[in-house]
Image 1 (spheres, helix red, strand yellow):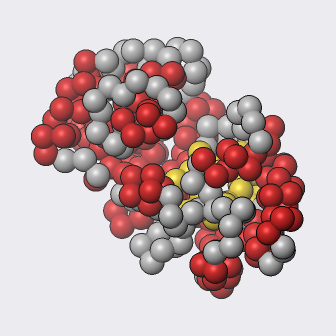
Image 2: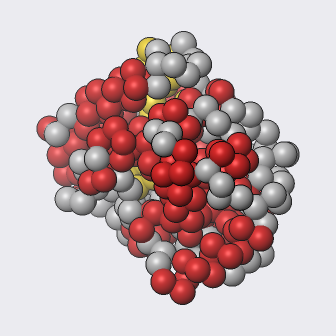
Length: 286
């Protein structure tokens, strides 16, 4: 697979040196190659801001310092190298010929990004594209490339296992997140994993596990995200919360995947090609 890593760090450094009134236009230009992959109505600048991206309507001296730090750390080179390792590990799976990757600086004052998402996240569900967003704190800067692997795993998995937004189930979505984290762990060790699968524990985890298992077969992506991302994200989407703790789907998904892998002896790499229902059946989990 060919990875096309857009040099957004250089572009953002240039953007942040422009007068404030020119920055929204520069951001639109930078994100233009990906716009068709984000079928969300509205101005891409508004979408960027609502998604936790750095502000282009306010000066903040932290932004350019953060971008320059990532250039010095070769974050985009790290992303490329980790994606190449992941692609090689998944060489038995069907993969697209190419994947474009776009990284965007986050907003350190965005509460959802920093407190609920752990300072970074990605999206790998759009064919041919992988989107990453992060604020490069000490805890995060070395994990951005591993987040890329998590999202790449989604991209490969759903090239091999059907993902239909109408028919996808809560179980499939939850297991996909747990399996992506298990794959990151398998490839690079537990220290590479994101914070999401360990954010919910104790009684909150037990409650989430019970609710997710009760609705495991509920279909439709308009429902599934609530069980993965939890109530705060659902409120931000303008939907009715279901009583799911934030990010609980990652913890539940990893628990289910670990149970299935332990019971079957499969690796996360091998399990990538199995639909969630089949993996759970083989593992005697459900």
